[in-house]
Amino acid sequence: MLAEWRTFLLSQGARFEDGEVVDFGATDREATVAFSGPIIMDLSFLAVITISGKDATAFLNGQFTTDVTQLADGGVQFSAWCNPKGQVIANFILTRIDEDYHLLLPRELQESFLARLRRYVLRAAVTIMGGKDTMPRLGVQFSGETAGVPFQSEGASRADSLVIVPVPASRNRWISFGTVADLGKQWLTLAQQATATGSYTWRLCDIQDAIPWITSATAETCLPQMLNLDLLQGLSYKKGCFPGQEIIARLHYRGKYSQRLFIARLDTTVGIAPGTKIFTVDKSQSIGTIITSARHPEQGCSALVILEVNYVNPELLCLENSSARFLQISTPPYLSLNQE
Image 1 (cartoon, rainbow, N blue to C red):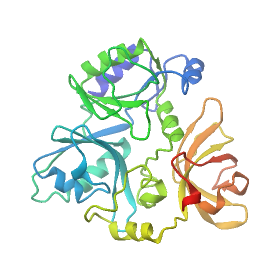
Image 2: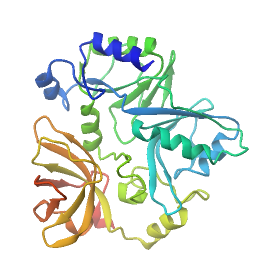
Image 3: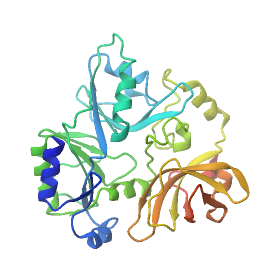
Image 4: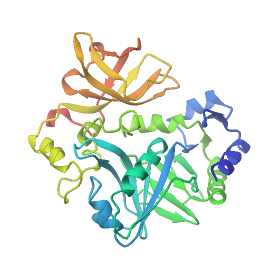
């Protein structure tokens, strides 16, 4: 089905590189509207995993960092799955539609995530579906009304075969997934009001909203609080046990965090690989990590970085094996260092 969706995108003028849409033939115009106007883009770099069954709620609640029992029909939340050391294996958007749970996470983690999660099902009445691209994905950013498209900010919804999910912590972005036929119809409706852009634009929007994504390069390297998942409502301290809970809770009740997620701008037009270590000019030990990055159409490179809170100064920082310089470090709007 992914091939069928690719054919549809090609008919709309998509240009691919390394399996990802880079633009729709008007790079300059697409860059101009990236943050100022309505845009749509392919999200094939995300995967959809569906989990169902009468034991699904209890099973997921015992694995994930959020209270899945409190997720109502149409509910949406950030969540994560950790190893026994409390390190994040993967983080994702979790939504419930009827009795099905849908997870959206980076496609590069899909295979290992599925294989690992299935080991814990044992005799539970749980069905985990994934690994096949049966539901292509698109992303949309709108700041106003969308004629003929049933987007709502209150929660996820259905429209024909489609599931439409608002992005938590972002008031004007949604993800749709479903059959090629229905998603294609939605794309054509949206294209009358929005500009089609390369997939990198979605990563830029995530960086702007300080929404992190763990990838294979950063899996099992950081605690949820280092990714600000506690501030994004992706971590519950009141629910029952889950892998790594004791270590994660100990950090919380200590009341002080040495590392947090920040937004960075660098003077390079080339993206920085996730997992790249950050140093200071006078310290040989790493004080941070690149979590994700994307080329910015006007400002070099934007990135989300984990940093020790005592080193939030671009003049002090340098990258491992790179001459790129930090130009700016910004604190996410939901983070207040004065309160920690």
